Length: 548
Image (cartoon, rainbow, N blue to C red):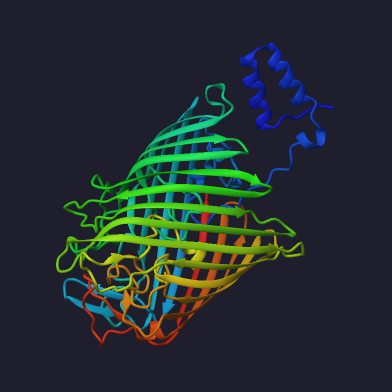
């Protein structure tokens, strides 16, 4: 019977060849005499592609491809050579929200405002991916165009969300442009290694602190160097030193009232800010339990076009988890600490009062996947992220306790962002549950509910700056109960090139959400006449994704 070698066995044979004939013989005997059932390759399975650009993820130089190739693809249509990869993707999403809770602040008038009507937006994301492979080197670039249209004017005489910002708009620019070197058996060690230099996006660990957002219309990207080493089936280590990329144009006090929908401006690296760190991931440390340990460092500085809060944070973390599988329990537990210094603006654009920063956050999740038709999985979860004791105290003697989610994603825990984005990983204490089920292989659904309190009632709701520039930016409410969020989402895959999803979220507002008021750009102004609507919020979206 013909034997089929696993990837790891093939690497072992290659290593043994360099060690000598006797070593080769021993390893060859072990590999070739293995149980046929153990070495037989399983039928290929593919990870479901996200509802966002994903062509850049299709060809992992160390682990291969785990995503199903688009059935309509340019590579085959144009008969391109094997060394060249090209992909085009377009996503269109319609969003609608009623009785918004978000406060806004307009520097040109100095007046905090809110919107109490129905608002809508069409978010467009278009992406082109090109990669050339030459032996162990790869040259890759990704052009991404993110823009919006169709906003309502609302009663505050401006488009909502206002001011338009770079979380939804980043006209055609380089999302990625890098060169990499990768070897699945680096220096005949049996280890895989990759070095990537240039502008790039990153997804690390659970993606709660470093991620390329999926739901958001724009992405986080960085310019620098990233090194990755993997011991197949055992561990993987990532280390990076980068400068975050600033998305332009952006609305802030230095560039107010920019027409972002029609204005193009190249993104630039923030040369005054460094983001670095490392994460070690271990597989099956005990039975099916995996673990991660990481440390990230953010060292932020002001520039003429990017006034900052001079965040200087160290963020260590630890995560244990077991992946879901049919007929078994699974769990996830992650703890994140954060310490350093941060500045707040008391009276001017630039932050000028330094405070010590001490914060922490956690995510706990336990679930069960039933061995039943529709493959239901039910899991309970709890998220906590600390807040400050007094949001108005910007003195140097105060300790800032508001957890900062850095460059992470929040939609998979807290729900959609876009013109909704009710909750972030900051000043939150929230239990909830989710139920996933799939009636057919091409359809999947999720029902979820989450009760939300503030970790600190004397702090603001969401927003890591507690200013109206970071929505919802509401403070001084009654109690700590924000509300009860219920959501239902579904996805239909017509094929691997055309996908649709839709969702509805309903926020039953609690005492804090009904009574909190909008803060100013410095976090010091409260106007009692500017409180959000007391009615519950409804949010709806529908998305189409086309891939070639």
